[in-house]
Length: 80
Image 1: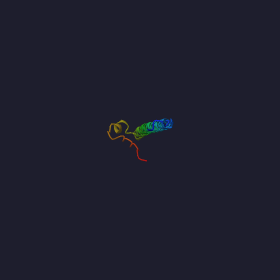
Image 2 (image 1 turned 90 degrees about the vertical axis):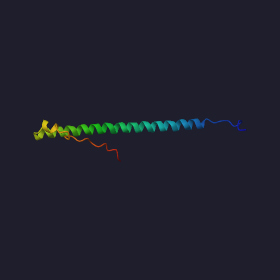
Image 3 (image 1 turned 60 degrees about the horizontal axis):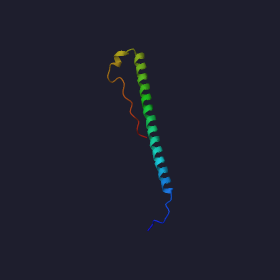
Image 4 (image 1 turned 120 degrees about the horizontal axis):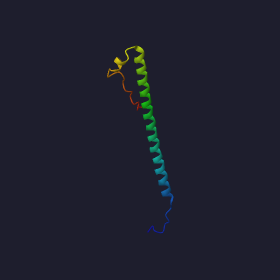
């Protein structure tokens, strides 16, 4: 009954645009997660270095570093 109506190509173009936007959004989320992970690692290493330098300046040095609670891990800061 509806065989005589010509099909338009607009639905395919719209679908590919939506799929492209969704894929781009996922790529942006992955990039944001990568930046946050690198930021977390860098801040962790900076704090570890500061604690190490502080322990060398106080004079206790290696004895303080043998303490398993010498350095605390930095929280992930995943809340915005």
